[in-house]
Length: 105
Image (cartoon, rainbow, N blue to C red; front, side, top):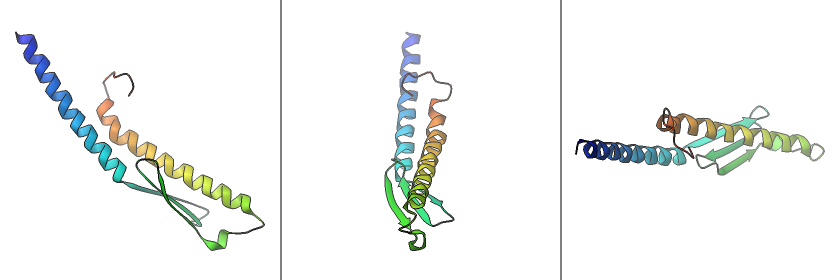
């Protein structure tokens, strides 16, 4: 019955790894990310769940004649902050999926 021992051991390793993954994911969700555009005129803050939690717009950049520029700055800062979340997620969670061929990961 040597094969069963190996199987149990593998299951224990998988459970340990799953706990570590869940902890890493919780830590990620609690992290805060921020990005600015236009030299700090627009700041967008997001959490690790990719939810935008805050947007700060400096009143100097609010020009009724140039709303397009303000929209572009908001889009740039939002895309930047979401890219940061993705990169950090990949860095943090990648350690669990390296070398493993798990469908869906």
